[in-house]
Length: 141
Image: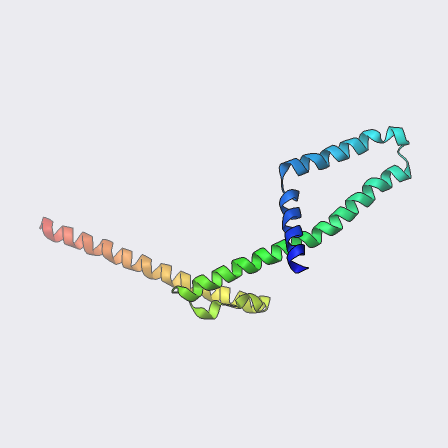
């Protein structure tokens, strides 16, 4: 059943995101609005669109959430594998299961480390510039 639901959820998500689907939905709204005078803008006429859009929205929320959860899990698995086989630190694997404050703490540490690295690069570049200037002054003398 899970595979069938996944296939249906993927199909609906793909179809729902297409421009023709948006155009069809706009056309339905236009037809509904134009039909208002024929039905005297009755409560039933209004109930039709309200009920239809509520049901569709309710179902789409779950389908879209399912699709996003699977996409997020797949991306996370790919990133974990890149970390595992690369030069990244393996302790980053699985951090998506930590609390928000724990993840924020790790992110802050990474930002501090990146800033220190940038400062080291800038210092090395400045030293190279100074060394080149000294070398060119010695050659001129």
